[in-house]
Image (tube, rainbow, N blue to C red):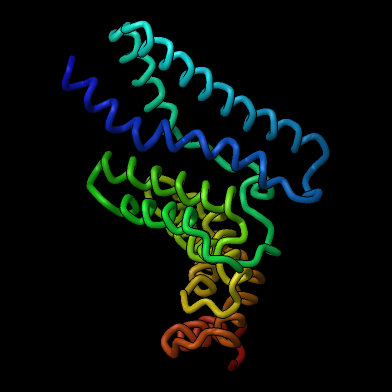
Length: 245
């Protein structure tokens, strides 16, 4: 039992504790009035609130069992918390998940830098379940950065990293990934990353939205400084449109 308790504590140190941030992020990122079907937004907001309340209730119960020394029930609630963080949570309305394109990376904020540094220590590390848990830890830290430090000069980098996280295992939420890639170059038009091309590939190959893909490939041609990326975009534009670019 002691081995299992230690394992739960290690996972919770990265998932449950960090995870408190994502629910609050959802609250703070609702901007304007998204163009969504009437009645959908309040239902999605209710789901987001229920997730947060469920997590908070488990956290409070865990704290109670720690205070009272009930080791067995502490283990139960920690296992449930880990399970909660491992389940897929869809962003039913990306307008409630992704910050607006108008943010600007203006200030060097040490706290934001530290969140980004910690996220990069987790992202892509490990194998199997450890890898998936680390990707979730990185996601939560990057979301915290965007929520609490929206003027940090790390927001475009955080958006790019979230794009990679959502594009890959364990998420594979491709439209969500594309939106974050787009935010990277919308927030920093001079980014040296391949965010434009990554977004274009998703719309082209996975979501099969030809018009959006063409628009983004043209963005690559017009703004990217990397010759190989520009050549790929030109080639794909020619294939999609049937015209020389």
